[in-house]
Length: 129
Image 1: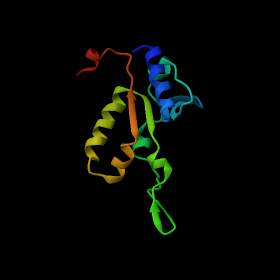
Image 2: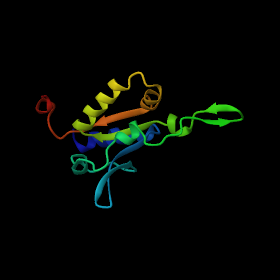
Image 3: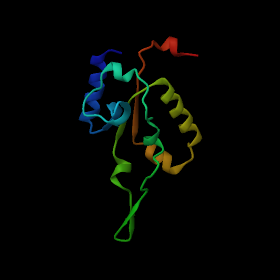
Image 4: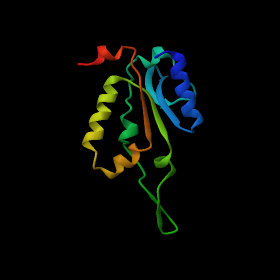
C-alpha cells in the first residue's frame, strides 16, 4: 500500500473523530502515542519500543464512576480509537487476546471501540507461514 492510500485512511479516521494512536519517536525510542499527522512509512516499518498492548489491556483503568448515585461509564471507554500501523506480530498478538478474552466483559467493552489498521511493507503472500 502506498503512502497516498494510507494518508486517505488516516485522514478519514480523523474526519470520523477517531483518536488515532501509532508509532511516534520520543526520547530516542518509538512509542505508541496519539498521532496528529500521518507517520512516515519508514517509521511504520520499525518495531515499537512500547507495544500497542496498553490500549487493549490498560495497566490502570477507571471502569465506571458514580454520579448522582448512579454508575456512569467514563468518556475514555466509549471514545473511538484507531490503532494505526500495527505490524504482523502485534496483529497476531491481538488475535490471541481476542480469543483468550472473548468472554471478558471489560476487555470486550474496550475492544468494541478500537479500530485496527495493520501495516506491512511485505507482500501478503510472503507473510504467510
